[in-house]
Length: 199
Length: 246
Image (cartoon, rainbow over all chains, first blue to last red; front, side, top):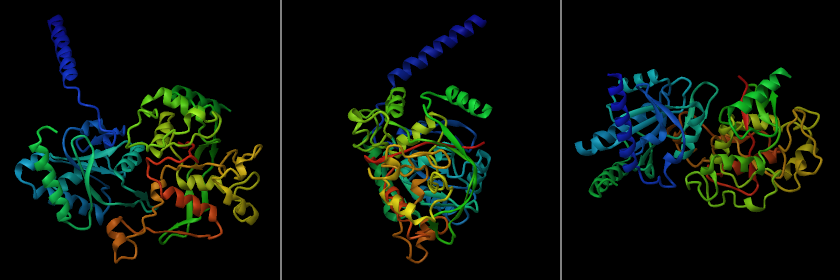
């Protein structure tokens, strides 16, 4: 029995190895934000590499949970964008909000934010490793500064990434609803991306 | 002594390449920063940390590139470095500070040895010292000499220049240095003044000014850094590493 299990395991391993060899993704574009090596943990406590987010168009933002003015706006703005998509596009587009405050924003705290804002499964709230917050912010062109009182100054933007992590468009958040031009760009992008197949 | 050897062992065990030169512990304290943000008096408290006694050299950076070939000039992705990256490499003096290095590359180098880039406040705190004084900035003669920072005439670029009172060399040398939070030296003041523009763009107020107009060298350094993109490189911009004291 043990032997059988073991050989089944060996077959499974070789199957995985061969399929992953066949499905090896093409080289990452030089300007992809997934060129940054970083690790993240999501609101469900799952840890993965930042690069694992490749493969799906995503809208990315950075925020922190203790922020009372701007950060609810960022999430509301993302939700509003999501609500303006047709059902097929809504299935396609992922949302990623990364915290600037990994010391306080534990996965549990991020889960609370997700529940409070009733975010669906398309949303990943991520806590980067302590040393990776700055690197990721730099890759996304997001500037921030910790204040002595525990708050952060930061640029508030929605950034549309293509499947390979190239920045397609960015929009500053100034309201509960996103800039209509940005919404139009996202919809056009999703329409074009699905028309051109898997790319 | 014991602590120093534990530290050395930790470095050896932590990762390669190990830095060939040392780090010094800097006791924490408060100091008056020349850089001010809206509504602050420039008083900063700096927690204890360790900083490299020298900027990372060409030789050290070369070892890093050998260990992590994704950082080679012909392999680095365009997100992480511009076309000037390591442009001077073939004829660089191995003992000179490594330059033509992007912020991303400097960040990755320091992470590879279990360290990080120093914050601006840490950097400014250590750079305020000369060989005999923890804060030499009240001395106008000394201050005037810092105007040459980033040029071959810089005071720490002279041969035989002594380390400062902390044992740190080259803070006022011929090369500028990246800091980890350089992007927070926000030069992006365009939105300020517009009604509530800053509150909308940032969570809270920002705005950068200088406490002491005489500290022209600091102003120049901040202006230079804040104009950089993290992928930018310059022939006179290098870096050193630091770490928080646990």
